[in-house]
Image (cartoon, rainbow over all chains, first blue to last red; front, side, top):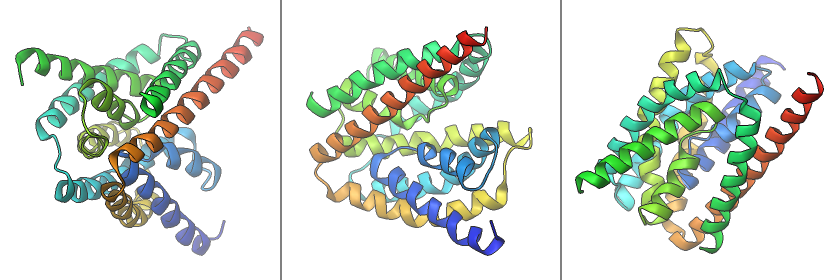
Length: 121
Length: 132
């Protein structure tokens, strides 16, 4: 891909990820990682790492807008963040020694149930 | 918040951290349903709080990836540039949409990610069993 085309397409992918992130309160990696692999031809690892960099300003913007609107649960947020940061290295350790495919399939099934609860609960 | 709630929320955050590192999904798709279904938050407040949690979590992730040289700062910056515009628009939209509708739409996203995860998991499992 030419340098100029890439300079148009990459920020466009950012816009798409940003809208998803702001609208749903997620990072946007769900959109960015596959796009970075397919369009920019990054490796899976590079795509993950690079999407995390992009997520920082995107999430910060979202927080500012949400803070003006509904208010955020700051205390809960701090607790969840503390837990998450402690949990990530544990997850990485476990990932190295488990059959992640079975786990992925099982957790996917759980997510389907959660999705249905959100839809009809 | 009672001590029990503090411990419970901390443990939920821990579980989300473990799972997102294990499964390669972001924390938000796990945290928002937890806040809505267990803590009984409005979808809108859950989303804002989830974005708040994502910032330090992503920072920790970037720090660990930086040392291994996987981060492309130039592409990250270009994405971030567009992302800030999209993020502001998306969040503004989330604030004007009724929380019930937002929850419904989010439910579709969770359902789609769950289906995709289950299908890839099963497919890769079959492939790895065949190669054994």
